[in-house]
Image 1 (cartoon, rainbow, N blue to C red):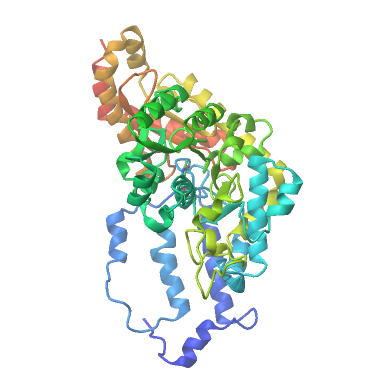
Image 2: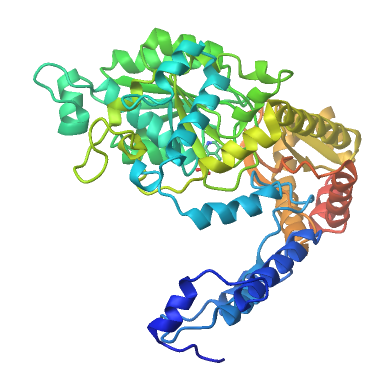
Length: 536
Ligand SMILES: *Cc1c(COP(=O)(O)O)cnc(C)c1O
């Protein structure tokens, strides 16, 4: 490999804009975009290369001593990295929430990196700051629909924030619960507040033994990270059983009262609007009542499902979300924005002041620096991608996207139900569903004698795992898997396929092919033979 020169002159060239269309860098750029377009247009999810093989391309541990030419390095990236990535744009990649992006984002990404603005403070972002505030305002309006006076007052107010933009749902959830914690243990008399004196002093001052967050078992694992870093401890994330996949308001209230009687405090109830595993939406309106009765914060984690609010047909599924104190929405999920775009919205624009932070050289008091109320420091101008998407799609465009994905999930559910050797496990509320392969004769026998389900479920779990892995390794399509309890099978935990229909380009034909592939793999397997052998 040719070694590039180690000179300042060479390094300066690396920083310089290419001159003209035919320059070397312009050619490299073209070559990279062509290759990317090629990769993304292939209808396979990933190459059949094992992770162990790929690790060998990344085994070197010394920092390269000599500079490399950009052109050579680009070739290297294409060969080692791009070729062995996962094609999340493939219409048969239906296992996760990460999916294809609208193509205009590729051009916008160049603008984003080109400008390299830092939203932490006005001095490094200027127009990006009001843009981000406007995006938060639009999303706030989508959730809370306050009057225009409200937005005229708060949208650009230096002393308020309608929300916080961040890298994703995890940080959004942490931020929401951080605000809730600081409000619950606010300064009071001689006590200077938890933010200054710490958790032990806060609990002692208010006379609480412990403080907990309450959600269903389907709550996202970011809640567990939140209670950990907020100092409450992971055991103080109370997750209630939810055979129906939704948090029961009665159970939440009963638990909350009992917990308070023991000298503890529920910090927040977290309702999920679109669980990661099955897409179910908690009964938000009823949970808002429970939070009110317990006198605690009500947070809604709508990282996935929040975009449903764009649809006038389906937004009623999230009824009650407007009563939440805070709401998490990920633009990088159903708003089709590149990763790194999360938001938390606060019903009360004063709430962000519970975590406000000042520093002398930056984030001065009274400035409009967004960094004063965000957990993260340096942040890029990702809000521009949300801004552009909101304009390019418009509410009606998003409505169409949401409606078609929910409709497609219903169609897929019917395809599964009408196939004798599949079993639908959870019906789609949004565009997620779960199912498994289950040979017809096994299903019939369990129907006749439900007590047999325990015996069969173990074998069915193995079959599901086998099919999922084989399908993934073949690389043509991808469906994920998870373990869960359902009402139909009582306490039994079972393994199921999990499908997220996010890519608008996935067709019914793609879905049919995925089912066909699964049945082919399953029916030839040892597991299938063993299962059907047991049928008497
Ligand atoms: C994806 C998701 C999160 C986490 O968001 P990240 O952007 O991955 O950090 C949290 N909650 C729910 C319900 C999610 O779907």
